[in-house]
Length: 354
Image (cartoon, rainbow, N blue to C red; front, top):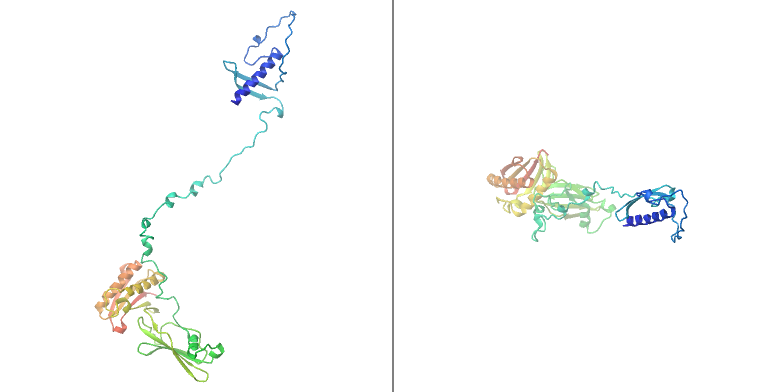
């Protein structure tokens, strides 16, 4: 629309200029037909009426127009011939191109909607608030503390001295007290003893082995007795907390021994052929210990029971449980059974070559 109006206005201006200059004609027209031919004879020219239009300014650019059948121009081409003032359109605008520096990777940055909208088949109902595999028995449960990771059994000698004398002693006073720690078994036999003429230590860490190379046994009770002698010779004796462990771990020359209480595994009479509920918890703690520190190492299950046949059945039950918990091949867990007295009946899991 704008181009057509511009062409029409220019055509009118050119027409006015042609009338003022006489011979000039519009492009595309025969110049011989634009005005009557001039003859050498002098003739009086009639006076023309003065034009009411202002004189058209001489264009500083040559133009060409293509007209239609009605005489209206459809296209006009303007070529500038002057200086910078004759340029059409003024100053050229600067080139502005918007570029996305992340265009090549923007598609990869978008999240996968299928992952955000996915619904686990294990949590599609209100009855299952978590997947079943979180309750898998093969997962290590760190809250089980049947087997501590400490260096041994700790006795607080200094604390027991204050309890024996009935008041808190300063370090200078306590340094003059002699002390003796005695650990006795169920028969009253002295199993372990330690002491000194003075300076009771704050703590004593005992491995559980006595001077004869004997280890305390799981399921047996032991008593700790503290004896102190004041500087004036006055004696003080006090009993410590009883010692009873359902599971004990100790190192021997043939391997690492995990000793378990048969009473906890197979009932009060130690004669059950299947694992009891308390025994499952104890055996689970032993399996977690093996998972953490001794995974993939061959094992041997040794059961001391009332008879050899009962021991074989109990050993098979323990070995089957460990195979399932440790996901171990059957050939990596050996089984042994022996007859023993009621006091010596126990279950031992031996980590070989340790």
